[in-house]
Length: 336
Ligand code: ADP
Image (cartoon, rainbow, N blue to C red):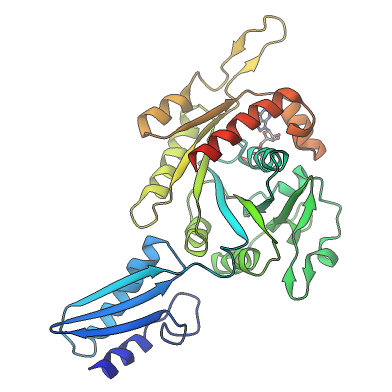
């Protein structure tokens, strides 16, 4: 019976892995109890949909061996030796729509964390618009000579943040037209085959919306949580609603640390009155409705845009910007 079960398990593979689950060392023990088979697995991937698929495949494969005893699969989480000891907290920044300030916020949060004394990395996974190189003034760097070292990728340091961007691999103005599996492969390298050194935080700038890349990232890495960015207009909120839905579906379920309202208002010069360009408190009200923690609001400030364009994170140049982002960053840490 045990031989038959082992044979069945040899037919179970994990996506993108050439080895079966026995060869990969995921199967720790098989117990044959009276009328019950208990299989113990040790995995480093915490995503629920990944576990569910594995359970389904194993059950199916055993049943194919004409074994009808009930099967119980117990999964223990193995810490991933490649990342856990060096990266303490991986946090992804997400948005429903593009252009709401996700990368600007990821940038300024990363630099705020450095200011607080943490070791920080920033992984730009936004294949549709990798803007991190621009925001960190890294466009001119000859990336290809710098990035590979001893077969490992080497992040590039700017303003105290270790940076790796999908944009390093495309020329300025060139679209990145990779299919899902290629993107997944590159992201895997970014995470597992990169010499990040010791990091307290790795901030991941996700592409906007919901899709393939989100799913593969959630499979690849164990995120501590998601920070969502939105503006207040109805169109942005309807998209962000879908993102929240995706992160909350049972098979993914990553904790959402909270939501940030960007471009909340503009201060008119003459009257010093707040003009709620995208609508007042849209994100704040949405957060209440969806039971999301409200991490803070960021006004629309010309300086934020200006420094972004110059490739300097605003928090380093302007006290007002600095205070806004330090407050939000502290809120994120508290939520962790
Ligand atoms: P996303 O990553 O969501 O596509 P970006 O971070 O690239 O958005 O921001 C889009 C543009 O908006 C950039 O030019 C950026 O400088 C600007 N921006 C973002 N947040 C603010 C803000 N609070 N005030 C002024 N400009 C902002």
